[in-house]
Image (tube, rainbow, N blue to C red; front, side, top):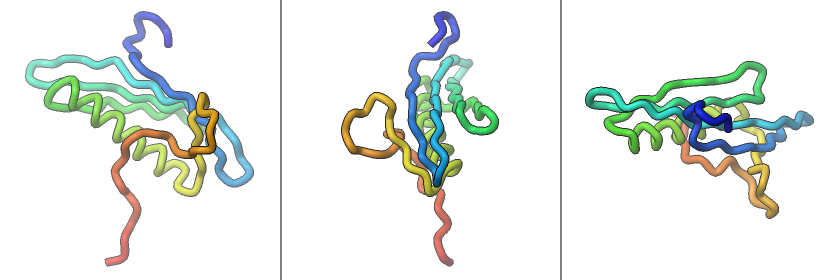
Length: 108
């Protein structure tokens, strides 16, 4: 994390999707307080193009919670059949460890 960038947290992931392996970096920040709301940016790098969105909430806590959930959902969307592993995880657990919305289609 670069000092002064406003990024307050990051997570490195290994993604295996089919025969492809890649490293994905998830970063959060900055958090910006606005009049009666706040926003938090999340950025995903390691895919063909970087993904970056600014997520708004009622306050800083909600903005961070929503940014984490949206980042988790975007990771799921980008590699629905992929297997994520947290870079520092020495165990056999898989997953990116972020909350997410279940965006899978269900039959009507």
